[in-house]
Image (cartoon, rainbow, N blue to C red; front, top):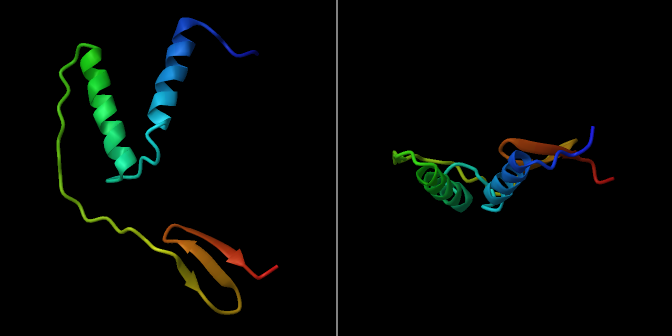
Length: 86
C-alpha cells in the first residue's frame, strides 16, 4: 500500500507538521503554549468559537539525576538507563 496523496492526506500532513514544529509539548512549556495558541487559532479558522481555560499548576522540572552504586542509573525523573561504563 503506497502513500496516499489526496487532498485530505496533504492537509493532515501539513497540520501535523505545523503542530510538530512547536517543539516539545510537555505541559507548561513554550512548545505547549505555542501549540495551544495555534490550536485556538485553528478552531477559530474552522468557524467555531474557541475558549481557553487557564489554570495554575506546580510542575517539577527535573535536572540531571543519578544513583550511584553497583549499577549507575542516569536519567530524568521518568527516564533512566543503566550505565555500567561499558
